[in-house]
Image 1 (cartoon, one colour):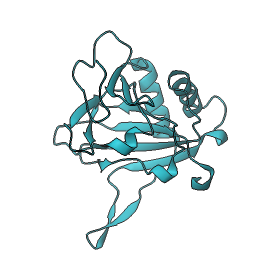
Image 2 (cartoon, helix red, strand yellow):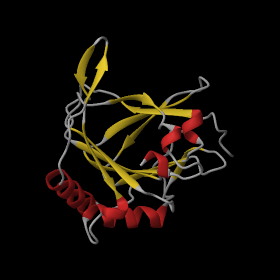
Image 3 (spheres, one colour):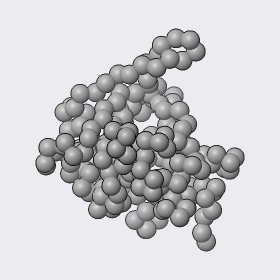
Length: 202
């Protein structure tokens, strides 16, 4: 049975199908591959990116003071990546599964359960219309909350290491997503997010 654009179905995500549709829309919706790459590959990518790139701590104004963004960040222009680098290999593999005109990769490193990102949708002016967003999860498992903007039922996806989440451009109009803080003991987790940026936003 088709899932409406306002619905969110997180049950039965781990059957024999290679991916599950969490939200359906005309552009592919939100799809989740729980075992996109094997454990060894996921661990290799995590270690290479954690140790091989320069992570940044950013700050932002909040409640009349400046606070640290609760995670570390890094950004890369895909065309400038060295051939054969871990990120370039990941990009090629993502593009084989979820084809797109990707131009940039944004990385987030959640050091422990205190790191998070609030519910949001990607800024539409910084995305090429019709192009997907592809998110690779590495490190420890963290829950992503997904909520329809029209007040539909919210749900949580436990993003496993080596998993892939694809979100359509259209889904950014209908849904928000975020990584909540957790009191459970969790290890570091990394997301690598591939996006197609318009020329004016680069």
